[in-house]
Image (cartoon, rainbow, N blue to C red; front, side):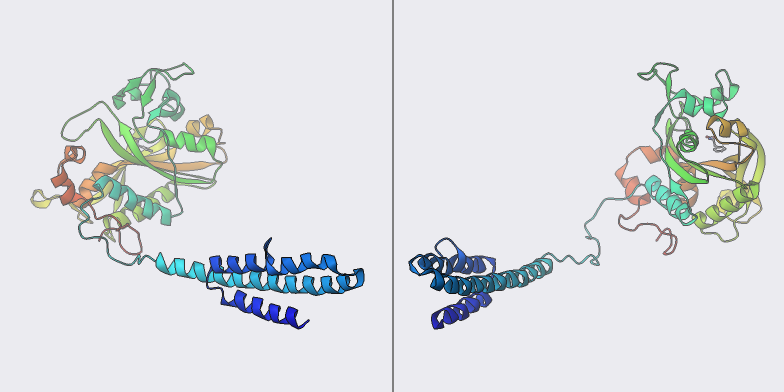
Length: 359
Ligand code: PHE
């Protein structure tokens, strides 16, 4: 008995004294391993009488369990200590400022998209996307521009061969409006999305590039009217240009996919040849809008007797030029590092409405 007790005391002390996992494993092997001390004592029982063996067996099993339990307990303690040490060693101070040698800049288009997304996200919109290579159906037909419709000609479309399924030639999307169609075909109302992205038209001069960017907005619900469109636009342009009393004006217009349709103007001044955004009595066009045409809703399987909605589209380059005083559209795509250093934005300084969109 005495020897088992002292062995127990000795082994438990060794377990507690193990400084790391490897040390603990050594203790385990020396006690419970194939050639371990407890294992050896168990082997010795062969020479005992059956009664002695029973008693001795119980004692040894109790000892074995006590040591095994102690090892498990110690293992948990060492594991926790190991994790804490690792966490402490791998700690990174994310509050440190960005490395001053960082030279990269965020392109004004990306910055402007981030700002627009931040504003509409606060109004409960989500971002939807569609492909740059579109079907004739999504870009035109479903938007109430059947084949031979004269409005198709206004778009200076880039045509591509038909897709694997045949049919009409595919197109580089001429506007972001096909994302309206994709969204309405895949989601049930109520719908509230914006869709920023690339668009293409075969046109190149001081105010046109063959690739440019638009942002589309689409809201569909049971009682949506033009007042919602106006309110949404007011909220957006005031947040974007950071002008609290910036006015918005509608001018009657025509788009095949909206009825009624309206051009969107915001207030500005052109005094002294300098363009300023604000409530100054003059007007500047920033995009097109309207109530989604009942035929477009029908083309997407939405009942126009129950649902209405509004949509608008804007040019992102134009918004960026107006906000950041960038005079020439073509410079956006020249990849001139000096231009990017001047007009670009510091990365990690993500726009958000609460902290200010541009710092
Ligand atoms: N897609 C139109 C364009 O590119 C803009 C627009 C979008 C008009 C949505 C009305 C509604 O000119």
